[in-house]
Length: 562
Image 1 (cartoon, one colour):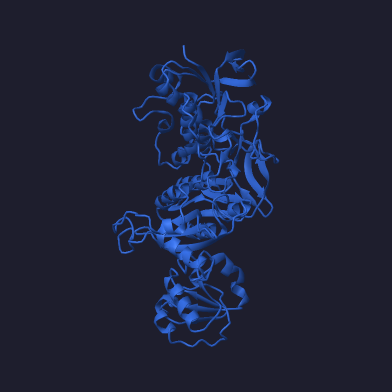
Image 2 (cartoon, helix red, strand yellow; image 1 turned 90 degrees about the horizontal axis):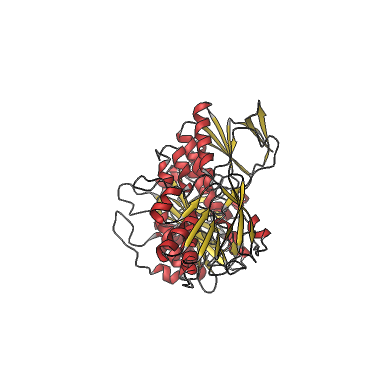
C-alpha cells in the first residue's frame, strides 16, 4: 500500500492535487474531505451564467462529456475517495491525524501527508441589517442559485453591488444585460482598485460611461435598509440607493483557522506560510490555493492573490512534490484580466502603488494604439501603461485598457517572468499580420517610448498629472493636430492653448518666454513627441508631451459637455 494522502478541500487545489497525484502514483491512498456539498466546480464563470451567456450551470461542475464531477465520478474514473459534507475540525500534527464531522458523527483519519486546500471566504460587512434576505456574497454555487432564483421569483428591478473589483464589475455587466437597474458602490476612488492606477481606471470608467450603470466611487457603505426581513436599500455616506438585491463583493479572507489552531506558521498576509515547495512549517503538510501565501516574482513581496489559475498550479506542484520531485513554485505576478461591457482591462506585475511599496525607483508611460492595424475592420483602441525600473530599465509591470488586452498582458507575463528589460521588450519577435497586429506591437512601442523617457529624449507628462495642474494655467498647451481634429474634440478647461499643426511647428514662434512650460499634445502622442523635440531644438527649455494624447485622455473633453 502506498502513502496515505489526506486533502482538506475539494475544489481547485484539492482536486487538482488529487487527480495529478493519482496519475503519478497508482498506489497512493487519496482521500479528499470537502465540507460543502459540491466538488470541483469552476466558480470564475458564475457571472456569465447570471448574465445568460453560459446557458447551463452544468458547465461548471460537469466534464465536457457531461459527467457530473461528484464523489462517484472521482471514485470510479479517478480512483479517488472524495467525500462531501466532511467538516474538518482539528489537525493533530504529532499523531498525524485529522478530526472531522460527517453526518453529525465525529471521526478521525490518519495521514502520511496532509494537503490544505481550504480556500477563502467572502468578507461580510458588519452593518445594520446585514442579515436581511436579498443580501448575498457571490462565491459559492449556492450563492449563484439564490441570486438567480430571487431575480426571477421576486421580479427584482434594482440591484446594488458593493465593491468594484473583478466580481463586482463582471456582475454589473451581467445584471445590466438582464435589464436590471444596476449600481456599484466603491469606497476607493477607482474601478478595479487593486489592479489599475488612477488614470487607467479613469480611462476604463470613461470608456463605459454610456452604459446604464450607476457608479458611486469614494462612497462608504454605512448600513442596509430593510422591510419585512428583506433588503430595500443601501445607505452610504452620501445617499441611499434603492435595492431589492445586494451583492457584497468587497473581497475574501483566507481560511486559515485549522492551520493556525494546529500551530502552523501564518504569514504576514494572513495566509498560511509556505516555502518554495509549497510545504508549510510542518514538512508533512502542504498548502495551496487561496489559503496559501504567494511570492510576487518581481518585488519578492509576500502577497494574497486568490485566483483559480494559481490554485490549479499549486495543486500540480504539490502532487509532484508528494512524489518526491522537488519542484519549486516560482511565485505569481498578480495577473488579472476582466471584460466589462465590451471593454477589457488587465494588468500584470507591479503598479505604481506596489512598486513604491517595494521601494523601487521607476518611471512609467501611457501609450495608446490599436489592437491590430488601424485600417483593418474591427480594429479597436488599446491603451497600455508600462512601468520600468530606473537605471536597469528592468520591466516591472503593465496595465492595459481597451480592445483585446489579454494578448498584451500574456506577452508581458512571459517577459516579466524572465526578467526582461525595455530593450528585450522592444525586440521581441511578436507575430505580425494586419488582421492581428501592427508591425511594431503596442508593447514594443511602449518600451521604446519609456526608454526615450528614461534617457531624457522625451519629457512626458502623465494624464492624471496634467489633470491635476490643468486649471492652474501656468503653462502653454500646444495642440499640434490639424484644425479639423481640434474642432472635433479637445480637452476641456485649458486656459492657455494654441493650435500649431505639426508641419508648422519647426518654423513657429510662440508668444511666450523660452523657459515657459509647454505641453504638446496630439491624438496618440506621436506628433506630440515630435513637436516636443522640435521645440526643444528651438530653445524652449521646459517642454513636455502629453502621454497618450487625446486617445489616452481619461478626463473631461469639450465634446463630453455638448
